[in-house]
Length: 160
Image (cartoon, rainbow, N blue to C red; front, side, top):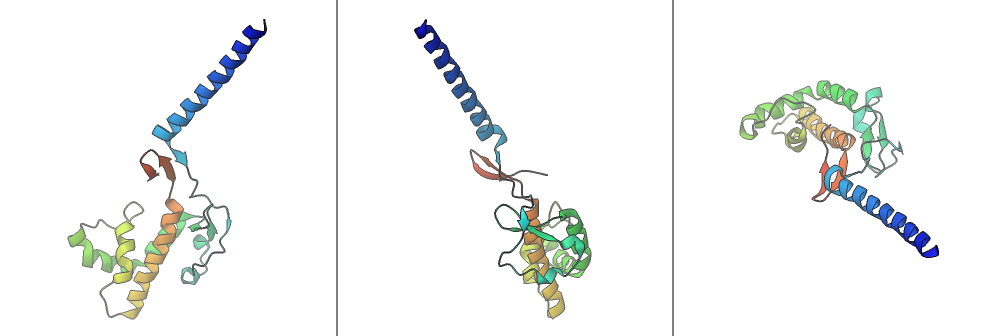
C-alpha cells in the first residue's frame, strides 16, 4: 500500500512540475514576461531635470519600477506637447521630412522627431531650445509608453 501511495505522490509532483514547465515555456516562447515599465510606482526623485515641463497638470511625472520618469497621463502630455513644441515639430518635418520620409508627428511615429529635436538647424535660440525640450519630453514620453516583454529573442516592445 505504501508503494502505491508513493507512486501517486510522485505522479502528482511530476504532473505539477510538467505543468509549471509548460506554463513557463508558453510565457517564454509566446507571451513573454511583462516588465510593467509603463506603470507609475511612486514619486520620481531621480537626477533628471524636469523644470522644462513647467507646471501643467498633464505633465505630472512619477517613477516606474525602474526609477525612470514617466508621465501619469501620457496621452494628455503628448497632446499638450504637440501644441507647445509645434514650431520645433514643424521645422523638423520641413528640414528632415523628405530625406528621412517622416510622417506627420503623432503618438505612433515620434521616434525620429526625438532624434532630430536637439539638432535643429536654426540660428533662432528660442526655437533651438524648443527642439531640445521636445527631445527631453519625448524621452520621458517613450518611458511612459514602453510595455516591455522578455521573450526568447530578448526584450521586445509590445504594441499598445
